[in-house]
Amino acid sequence: MPHKPQTILEQMLAKGYTRRDFLRFCSYITAAAGIHASGLSKVVKALETKARPPVVWFHFQECTCCSESFIRSSHPIVADIVLDKISLDYTETLQAAAGHQAEEALHKTMKENYGNYLMLVEGSVPTKDGGIYCTIAGKTALSTVKEAAEGAAAIIAWGSCASNGCIQAANPNPTGATPIYKIITNKPIINVPGCPPIAEVMAGVVVHYLAFNRIPQLDGLKRPKAFYSKRVHDSCYRRPYYDAGLFVETFDDENAKKGYCLYKVGCRGPVTYNSCGIIRWNDGVSYPIQSGHGCIGCSEANFWDNGPFYQHLASFPGFGIETTADTIGTILGIGTAAGIAAHAVATNIRKRKIIKHELEHSVKDEELKATDEEKKGGE
Amino acid sequence: MKAAKTKYAEYYQIYVWELPVRFYHWINALCIVVLAITGYLIGQPIAIHSSTEASFQYWFGTVRFIHFSFAFVFFFNFLYRIYWGFVGNSFASWKTFIPYTPQHWKEIFHVLCLDVLQICKKPLKSIGHNALAGLTYFLTFLVFLFQAITGFGLYAGMSDNWFTGLFTWIIPLMGGDFAVRQWHHLMMWFFIIFAMIHVYLVFYHDYIEERGTTSSMVGGWKFIEKPEKE
Image: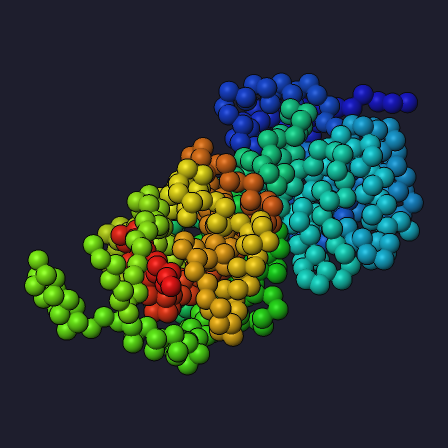
């Protein structure tokens, strides 16, 4: 017998939270999801009346750091709600069911809620050799993701693995690891990159979907604008040192002790879009730059291949590890200078006849004067 | 007037580079020098061990500001030059940049043979750019465009300006800010190497052809030898 699914408010009340807790939760999550304060009533209404859509959470080629991050969300109430429900549906690492039971739960959810469920994916999908490098319940990740996407209302690609391939897709990408948006093209996909993404960002994205039943506003790389529209650099508390031109030269120098900008020791903040500088980690305790280490750009595509991490300019592929654009440029510049010098010498040898001819035909100063005199005399 | 036959060559004066072309050239040269220096500094800031508080310093911000403002001058100066390629004289025309006829290619090989490899003897008397120079400038125009697109694309991330917003598509296309910045930086070296060769070749032509190649970009005039009669 199909039971009427509970709304989020009902779920919370059943768990012993008060309505006041619920409202506090709503206002927190409204802010966290980047929704204007005027949207609060909409969020409250949605969570009061709407049943939360079923969620299936897949794990493919990944390290589970996204899940780890998510369950450490500083406001556990979010994780409680989402995860309690998820465990009823499907997620490899957190569900109570195992083996055939788990598969049954997954297929039941997919069948009963065809077209309505939210599909969350953690990890990239290997595509080489028929996708044999990641199989679950005897099926490849590739076939699972295609099957599940078929009936999904929307897909959230958790972390850098699912949204840009992360380390598995780093050169030479032996398994053909592929981000979700390159496999599924006919469903709304939200990329939430980061290794892992910030827990509050993950919660914010899910709640946005729960509250409004549509995906948040995305940028050109399908990332929610609310969290990924500014660079880590733009909100960095060390930014004034950057503008002042005060940089850490090495990690053990005086400038490092003073907390100067980490730009010259490879900080990727200026090229990385994320909200680490604002939301920070572990309930706002800190983030990499605050701990004295540059950003490694974990939410940007190809960040593993853009190394070394402690160098501002990446090494160029095919030229050896330490070869940067500047090294190549300097070598080419020296080569050019040598070529010019050789050409100048060659010119004086090869074109000596022309040069000699020109010199012979040059008017001499005395001759010019003589011509002037002649003219005067003629007049 | 008696037709005095001298043993000296006689010359026509020819106005080659019009004032807008000369202005474009020197504004462009200034922009490239400033952009390359500031760009290099942005990529590789000099080390300062200072006891002054950050609030009293802004040199890196100033360097970046100069880079950005010259970028705008550079871009619009370039656009103006494209316009002048359609309304200027025949030496400034877009037709001198794109080798779309067999004559262009014939001249390109001639220049390679005569001036670069120096194995041909047959003289070539092109007045404006020769065809190889034209093609090279066309390639630099493509690099100008690339630098403008990648530069404005990177700049758009920190600006609400609608104009730079027109260039944001380059970021996802190249796979992220990092790659865009990397290529933008590498292309700086193209300008440095181009400038070295360009200046050398101007001197070379001036030296070999004695037609005032160097000064033509200041005053606009070149001197063409009258063909010897009889």
